[in-house]
Image 1 (cartoon, one colour):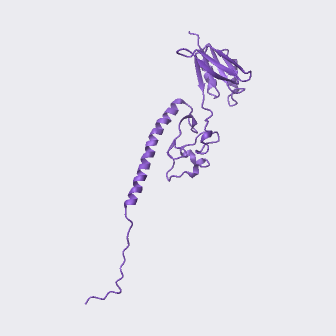
Image 2: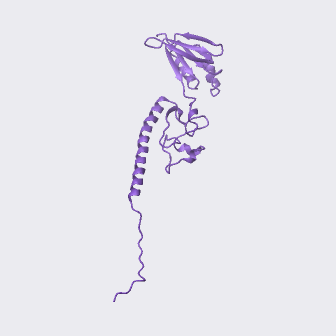
Image 3: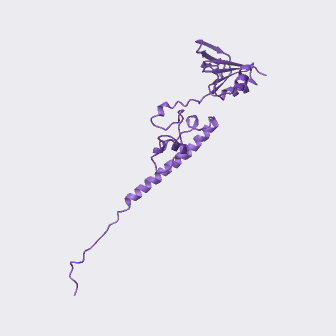
Length: 215
């Protein structure tokens, strides 16, 4: 078997079971953890398996700072923030587990977000402050944000499955929903134009009391 060295980095809980899986076919797995310890939401059983695995090396308070290679990845550079040291090693594969922090602070004034910053969409809007102020008379479409006609998909959407395949699927759904939204807008515009063309009803009255009866 070819000697391979794999690196698995990130803060999400998914990266920990992935490290054990990669260690089955890798000479060494470097697990970079940006915090001071493994996730509080992880079971002690899983933490014990990772710490006891002979081919997994955990680097706490560490982040990847550089990738290099000719034609393919050959070296990875990382920095230990606790020791303020930068090191590098011959690592051929990097797996990044990202998406736990949505980074949607810049949307707070424009969209309804949940308490973790994820974008609320579709029928879920009714349960959040601000979502009850939905302007159209229709309910929001699936994946539609609190701004009519703007849709949210992928990791930043509240309640989404944090997987690439799921994000791609939601993106495909969003294309269909955009066409549906535009069609509804076209129908509303046509109805408004038609209403303007219909003349208002006219009431005609006549007073015959002053007329002289015909002889």
